[in-house]
Length: 415
Ligand code: HAM
Image (cartoon, rainbow, N blue to C red; front, side, top):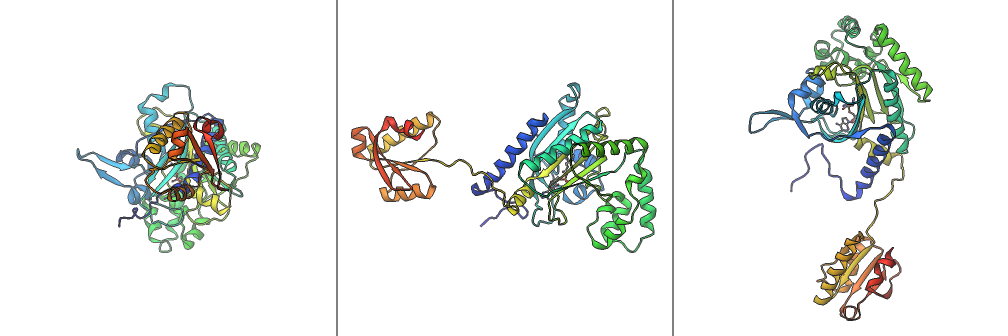
């Protein structure tokens, strides 16, 4: 028997109401903040991701699903949603419309990670990108939007972590300080951190290994190295968040796993925090559009993992509305009745009323069992007598009561 590949999952009908709920709350919050939906392809040129996420990152070096198509093009399954949206922004001349351009997406994301609870090789993200505005007002608004989204979902006790990792002017000084500091720790770092020291210095700060964490706690903080503009920007973001009554904690070790970030970075965490548990994260990426060939264009965004939201909705026992159930099953006995049943089902569907039509080849008892199994409220039974008298027998499943009604009255009764 085949199974779904390791790290992937089927979303069965019984789970779908969680997903529709999250999508409806996401769409609601996007409407409130003026975001429009965009859908980009599941795969892109691999270079788009290598360039934007960064060659030294875990995502690019270890986790990307890359392949060559029959024409020899190097492609990759989307390992994140920001770079494709920026590519679409540039490709479709969105730099020529009023800025910022605010876009949102639901997207399948692929990363070859070690699967565990809340971490998959295919997961879904709801993400937002606001492109073309540098003001810290937008940073606060994007964070406010993420916060409101989790509140609208009914989640409780989530928390916000915030940091600024500076810009291309001030970050090199911080990186130099980090290199010097970590050079003094040599021999006392894990294998990954020894590599990071060379290739991705900032990521030393968010190593999950306990020993490295202690070293990271004492490491030079990016906020101590910010240039005046970055420092003022960070102060404004904090002030605006306080004004919007959004509680946050500055976490000096928050650096995120993608290289494109500048200045503000943030993550939202559920109450019971485990490694890899972030509900969502994002930040500014003021150089990315330029890096992809556009003119200098500041931008900021965030994304959340939908599986992690489902996990937390369940953990917090939040009542999620069920999807509307089918109300009516049509059972029939005999060839004449079957024709009548087909006609009736077609007529009801024409009027927008959902029905389940029995194939009609089983006994009435078996068809009623089938109707029960589907959990419908009513079964319309059509037999020879009903065909002759243009009626049907309507059975209320909960009470087993039956009444004979004119076929023409069914719609009225159902409504
Ligand atoms: P990210 O932090 O890599 O950011 O992913 C965003 C969210 O996706 C995470 O906070 C987490 O909830 C979820 N997630 C990530 N990896 C997995 C996984 N393997 N399994 C399940 N859920 C996962 C980004 O991708 C950025 N593009 C976010 C962004 C948008 N920054 C600016 N704009």
